[in-house]
Image (cartoon, rainbow, N blue to C red; front, side, top):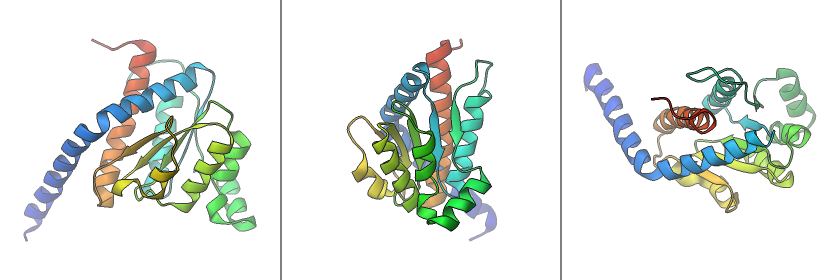
Length: 197
């Protein structure tokens, strides 16, 4: 296969995955926006975690809320649990890497806060432990997964939201996760500030 054709195939697969996601995920994304807005309007915060590309997505999301997405607005409380190397390395060294997010959730999370838990497989052990810690703290969980949701899907309660991309390939799941994050940011802004014309 020629390189150009291979590139076209990536674009087409991404388009197809996003079309399936449009049908499957619009309503759950709206539910996630509602949960996040309720949290923020009640002086709560959103804690985000994930590994690798999902760690980068956590940081991206927190930056959009604390700063701004596409228009000026007051700062919103969000924190990526993926950024403090001293905390991460201490927890991984003194406990296990499975606990690096859970211990931060226990330290920082309060009832009514939201945990944004990102795992393309739905099986990341440290994200699962973070969800358990959030459940102990009476936090709501918005999970971003793929591949059917993995073990995370089975952990969620009726008031949690699973934004599960209908795909198995990691790169396609990550592409939809990024779009989903932008939908969340836009939805939060539109709910709080009103839709722009």
